[in-house]
Image: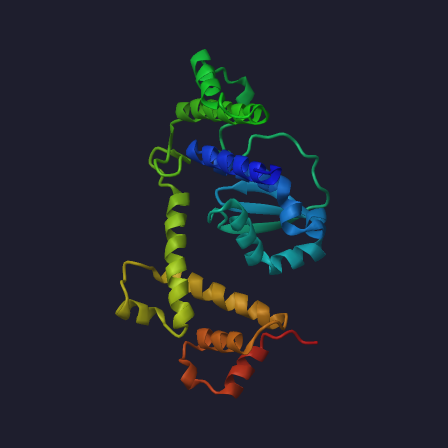
Length: 284
């Protein structure tokens, strides 16, 4: 096995362990801030940065109004790229804020959603049994990884003590900390994302379907009108963006016209399709 294969195998192993211990998402969110320039490219990375990550909403600080407008146009693509990096549909919205200067990077414990709890994690004392248990759990890892894993596990144990003391409980599905009567929004969004994928596939085949058609022909409990409108709207926005930048195809134009009018392709003439699509084409 060569060095590249060894590194890939070690990386996969680490990912599996982090996931098993509910540490993968916090770790990925931590690295997301660091890797923002790599994910978005040098220019975007130079003029913007991830300011805050909270409950699936990512706030991007942008250094000037020109880049603020540019990034807003590519909001959907940025969301998809971030979710692709995270390997899950975590990002539900992106907000852009104008800011004059990048802050000096500070060490912080990320993924804290509890607004009214301000505790220095390093000040929380852990029982020796807990520390020993963590050391035992990571003892078989390569030496280079043990220190990082130790810090992650210790931070997790300290967070557990703090949040439990404030009446929080972990979600049984994803491990996210919740208030006693709170439902896990993340798990709900994950289920909603799965429903959106199914509906998107249906509209890909029959883009003329209205919500009334869905109710009549398909399982009413599978989707809501809100999900339907969201999926249809996202399809329309993506196609309009292709038209605006003049990278659309004839199939894209037909699909956009059908989605907007909710008429079948046989009911639309070529001139009608052209007139609709040209409304969204950039004027040169």
